[in-house]
Image (cartoon, rainbow, N blue to C red; front, side):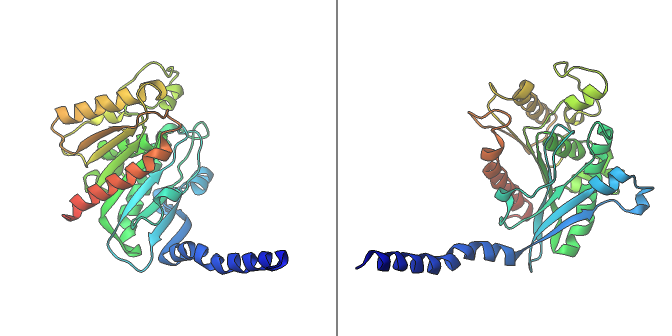
Length: 284
């Protein structure tokens, strides 16, 4: 066979494979819908500032044509001072919906604003997800780093969601990936307190340990490499939750990666824990 004929055969073969390679992507696009930049605060919340109009939005990624699915409210990291909402690729195509949330950032806004935004976004999902096919009784909150802190705080301190017309104990579970359990270092910076000085007050998830909280999963990187003792914070949180009688706390340490490197190996664990908690919720 001539060389040109061989090349032509390979070209034809590769062209024939393209539809097969694209089929999984096309299938995902057809079985999930993405709604972007949905405002989760309404004018009824009061006069919305420009920062609220810009940042108080979420993207909603949902299974299409299905009913009763679980939903994960996902908070990005960035130290409460940076970051953008995104539905992580590892959380797509997993039979649950993802609400990726933006919130106001320090120093343009106060750190308390980020916490209130997290509660407002979660309350919106709990209230609205049924109209998109989801089960309002199977809403989880999760996040990485600052996002893990926000998820844990609004789930454990019931006042934040209550102020937004929702109940923290209706959450199906909380999964925090390397989140602060003491008062966040950016909150401390706002008060002029150094990052190495630990504070446990009303803005610390650890301050709100309680037996009747939703199931709590704490995932961290390697204890020897994590940021500012992040593993130890989470280990103490897990211990104190058990001390007060909470039976649904689980601590997972990923050996090897540091704070920045733990996210990728944490995603499969997050999906696994969501499946476990969702199964417990539905009795499967």
